Amino acid sequence: MSVTDWIRLHGIEVFAHHGVLSEEQLRGQVFVIDVDLAIDLSEAADSDDLSTTVHYGDLAVAIRDRVASERWDLIERVAGRVADLVLENDQVLRVDVTVHKPSAPIDVPFADVSVTISRSR
Image (cartoon, rainbow, N blue to C red; front, side, top):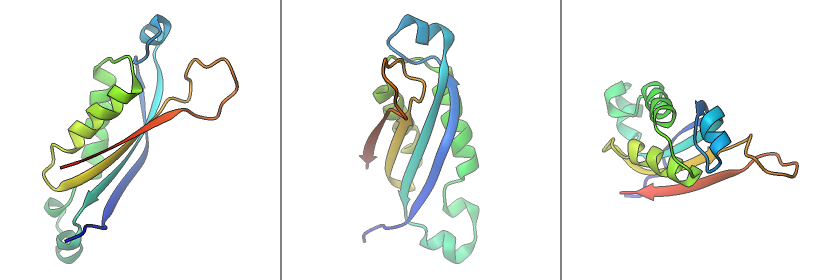
């Protein structure tokens, strides 16, 4: 069976201390996280039962807590750790994680810098 159902949770803002530069690690900055979860939602759609899906409110809190409490140099690592967290839920078949670093120390004007990774079971 091919899953075409998605839960999308975008724009989770987290203040954290990730970055290669010592100033980033010391001062911290806002990161923005997007997650897209591939999951079979047919049972939830039929039953209206929260236990048959992913509680996206709880997931947002768990993502915020993990990203804020740990420290890494690369946003690639941030994305990987978020993907690992999401895949702890056996209902999730695939996750796409985008980590935005809107205040990255780049010497030219830019709108956004981000990385996206996809992981599946």
